[in-house]
Amino acid sequence: MRNYLRIGKIISLHGIKGEIKIFPLTDDIKRFDDLTTFYIVESEDAEDSAFERAKTYEKETVKYIKNTCILKIKGFDKIEDSTKLIGKNVYVDRLNATKLDRDEYFIVDLLGLKCYKNNEFIGNVKDIMKTKANSILVIDNKGKDLLVPMVSDFIERIDIKNSVVKIKEVEGLI
Image (tube, rainbow, N blue to C red):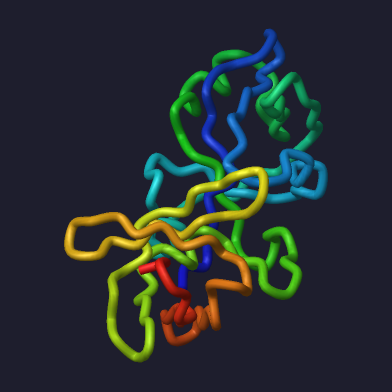
């Protein structure tokens, strides 16, 4: 389980006072309101070791325009200060991550989980599709995608600690 979660990607600058525009990679764009400290790194899939030398940044202000977040970082007061951040990724550590309700998961924690039906291995979670109704696990089954809705009718148990998803026996599902 990773200790750092990617919550956005810096896509451009905003204005002349060093503000950055972030494309949020989170279900709730307003999560940036609660953001205090964060990390900025190059990688979209940074390992925990990348944060040992990463600098911590502090939020000064935040506002929203359409589906983006406009963030002002403390100490970044000019365009020149922020230009070097374009294209980089914004991460938080788990302690500062959004608190999840029961049966809610971070996508990064679901990716790679081993899926079983009747104790038979059927594949690994390779992606999560979001729909209006619910999320769907995309399971790689020998090169073929199996789609399983993340609802109690189809999922018996998700065990992040042991990296396992138990899928219920449902006729026609798999």
